[in-house]
Length: 407
Image 1: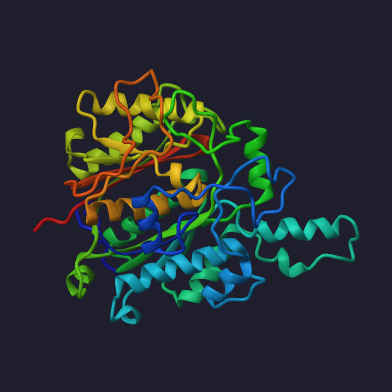
Image 2: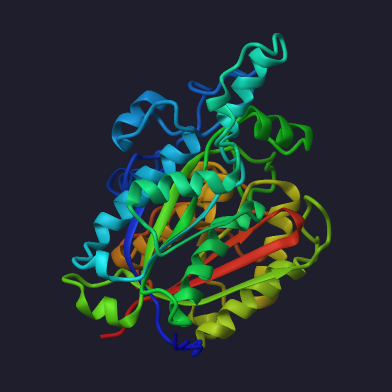
């Protein structure tokens, strides 16, 4: 098979799909973003020792309700159910008539796999080895979540799973773009999913980076993050497929990069060198200058370390011409492996509708920086280029650049 290795081969976003704490589909999420409705609150579906103490951002549906929407068994892991729903919406939104005749792949990210089921299995099994249902552990692996969703979508050409902490689904998206650029696939549904689990909640609580209130990224008095869950996917297509569509693509994925500063297992380098390297490389690939970026969807978790590192990198790259910016995690919480996919959907919508999202609950901007995120929704903006940041544990930093299609 001939391989096209031209990095300038365009890749377009033809469809988007999402389920998150602020909405069960694209339309509901867009309405929440415009009305300022955040998704944090007391735990309803996750059973935890910290219920009533630590707020979370849950998808507002039970497993039974998710299974009904997905057309799947309610024994399926929550992670897979979220993936199936969002990925299917993205594929339907793309409305590709001849999808069966195209080389179509599914590149999906997650970090917890089917752990939501595994946790429940061991509660009974540790008390009595004769108890516990094995069906709750056979789909534990991250890759199995991807396979379940791919089977539901009927995708056979190519399936892959990415798990690089909080940058997972951003990496899935640009890996999908590379598969298209190298003429290996025509269409890729790419993004990620993660569900709430006791394991992740306890782990982040041990790191002492969970806010007992609602998170306030880039605020001088920020106290940490809120854990969230959800799934977000974009349908990436080649130029040939884009030209065949009955409707205009949302935007182009014009740049992307992944860098790793290997500073620490969980902390970002204080000087933001990993963040800076990812942003600058993505910008270079896009052929843009810093002043061309109209909006940055910040990684913005609300932790002391993360916001300081990212802000330092933003200052280094963009000073003195700062784009408008905000962290949509102030709406959704940190959806971990799904965050890059969720925020890619938000970025595509920002370009399509000319939106700059507010950074909720920001009262006192960080004193270290001369810039501050937006605190009010801006509509009717000229949003031609959006940078979306996803910076994960282990120093794994990724940035994506989305651009309006010319003409």
